[in-house]
Length: 182
Image (cartoon, rainbow, N blue to C red; front, side, top):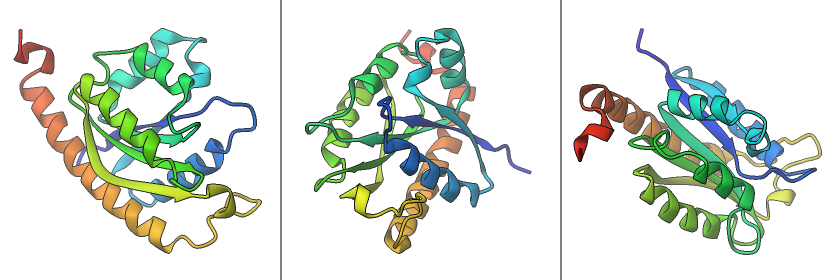
């Protein structure tokens, strides 16, 4: 049996009463149907509690999936703090995005995050899942009311993330990334 892909789902918001929990729960339920992933949840709320533990957990995974809102046409300070608190843990690993927000569905936040993660040698995949007017897409229980398009997009995202995770994991094992330009 192939080794499972260790995937960190990263919360993009630390606000009290955040909608991020609803979207993360949907993402986790969708991934649960794909047996090749083992999930670890990384929350920026935990950053101050045990920085070494967060660093270890980020370092141990094969891939990342950031669930981010868009606030004022950008991503959150909490997410930026989490990203900036670590460096080598991100390197030579794939990253996917699920975003949510108002009319743009968080896509402006993703575009900015792509630039940030490029500086950390992260391979950000093109496929995304985006929820425009997200608050009207989920019911009171957090159930996505019309999941067809989102599920199709999520399936493509996970297939590409899996491909990158497997190939980059093998590449890192054969040639440690820190040794490439040493």
